[in-house]
Image (cartoon, rainbow, N blue to C red):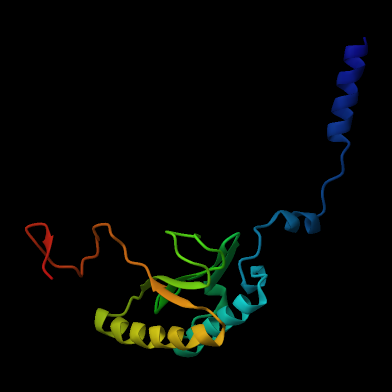
Length: 164
């Protein structure tokens, strides 16, 4: 009989619970990905300058920018069709591939515009980053290149080898 009473008690407990209000459902939402996730003030100011550059030059809305903070740095990823970038600022030594601390790493740039336009804009953006680094006490500017074979249709291949 006690087993039956325990079962009835459990059923009453389960079905007797009140529904959770909608305001509590928002707390289980995804964590923020805006610039507020960056805790280091120096990096936050540097990333705000990059955010402003992307907005002023390409009209990139802040909603298209995602920030992440890691134990060894911060990343910024833009999901903009015109000019999308992927950046990382390392704050501890040996953070990635034995790079020192205080490194701004440009990991990728893509665009729906043609390659000539992208080359010109990438040069301007690189110059901007070179000026940004000393302003925010970032000692190194590094570029990452993909060592794997590209599936980009713009790369011409002859007998399976790149033309250039």
